[in-house]
View 1 (tube, rainbow, N blue to C red):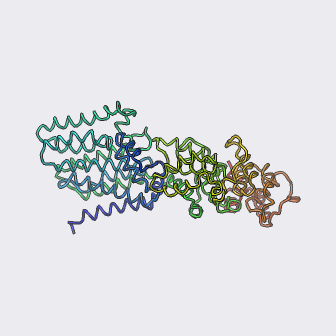
View 2 (view 1 turned 90 degrees about the horizontal axis):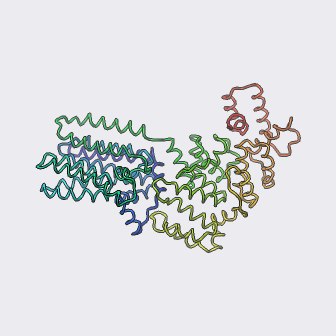
View 3 (view 1 turned 135 degrees about the horizontal axis):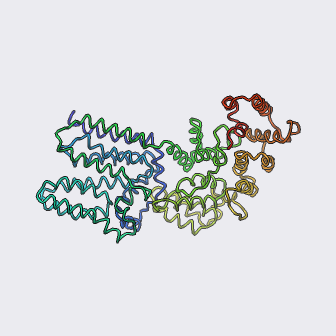
Amino acid sequence: MQKYSKHIIGLLYVIAVLLFFGICYPNHISYQEQFQLFLFTPNYFWETLAIPGGLADYFGGFFTQVFLYSWGGAVVLALLLGAIQQATWLNIKPKGSYALSFLPSVILWVFFCNEAAMVATLVAFLFSLLAAWCIGLIQNMWIRRSVSFVLIPVLYLLLGPLVGLFVLIALVREYKEMYGVIVSGTMILLLVFCPLCAQYLFNYPLVRLFYGLHYSRFPEIVPTLVLVSVLAVAVALCWRTSKLKMNGMIGAVTAIIAISGISSSADFNKEELMGYDFMVRTRQWNRILLTANKKAPSAPLSVSALNLALAQKGFLADHMFDYYQNGGQGMFPNFVRDFWLPLTPAEAFYYLGMTYVAQQYTYEAMEAIPDFQKSVRCYKRLAETNLINGDYKVARKYLNQLQHTLLYSRWAEETLKLLGNEDAINNHPEYGRLRKMAYKDDFYVSDREMASMLGQLYMSNRDNQMAYDYLLGWTMLNGDMENFPSYFSIGNMQMKEIPSCYQQALVLSWALSHPSPEGMPWPISTNILNGFNGFVQAQRQNQPVDYMKAQYGQTYWYYYFYSKS
């Protein structure tokens, strides 16, 4: 049994990583896939390879494609982190501590709790470990050293600065041998020389050539945990000379580092936001509602996703205030120059029929990606908006690129057949409908004139129920009770029964300008009138906020008086 204990522990570690990313952190997985455009073309391969660390970046991008499916990404991360642990063990056995071989992998696991971490990091780390192990198999000292000298610049070009891990292991191996000090010094000089030379060949700042181009999505951030993981390999190598084994204690310390590091680094608030954005992207409207019923969202992005799901299911007018609302931002979050945050509002604009606005938000988001990648998600949406708007040459440009992807090629090929075919587009269940909903006249787009924009959108096509619901919802969220009745009147002829949220707003609007309910021109239900009378009575009695929330928290009246900013 002891013979297989190491394999069992390694397998349990891989399973732990798999379950963490697959169950506890799945949305950070799917988040990664949308911010690259991996193409199966020779030009893409050579362009990627032509930059220091290009091979690691290419393989990292290849693996990241399957991150669209969270369990696929979890499997990739689990296997890579498990392979790093095993490769570390190959370099430190037989005298090393098996428990310490987990430490570098655990630190990289913590590193991947940050959404800026790139899969190229794990690829470069693993390849460096494997290269060091393979070189260690060469028995002839001079051949081993000669190959090591050649490999340092080669691995720098292929893997980036994590070639330093290869050099570190070589130094530990060589420093006690004949001329070890000279050999070690030469290796260090080669390691430093690589980025110094690269600055004359590649148009990147020297500091980035030292800490890597592909390890973090944000160029200005130094991936310190990657450096710490390299130092952890050094600790594992040096421990081989220690007579103190203490595998049990080391294993416990490693487990504590894993638990404390993951709990402090994992951002479950972002995980929730990423989950809502992913569900919007994949049109999982029912799942959004189920998620919100378990825990009501509160951030603008997640609330806007919920409101979009309510509108798509036809529930917005009746159930909008069953959930927490945080003002107009809960419908259209303020535009910010970011590579991710504008994408959920862009989805709402797209489904409303405001395809030019959706196109602007999507393009701005893609151009803000900090590592200057293109986005497969944005390419797909831009192809759709240009197709709907009749800009077929531009749509073809995006679709031709998507043809060379793994998961979007079939969709791109089918969509290419629509270009120029007006009858096919007009009869398409989505593109034809959105084309009919689009604005008929040009105008200046401004988020300060959202009510006017939504009103024009609805008036251009009275079948656009979502535009009407968003117009009234926007008006209610901003507390504009003066204009609500007039906005309501442009579409009420199509209603068999006034939705409950609209009834509540109409009653409130009337009460703010009239002393009694007599003469109201709308058919308000008895339940709504009784509820409003009870709300007013409770206010006159100065009931505490907790009481008002418990009794009326799911009404527009409570939102207007207690929640509206």
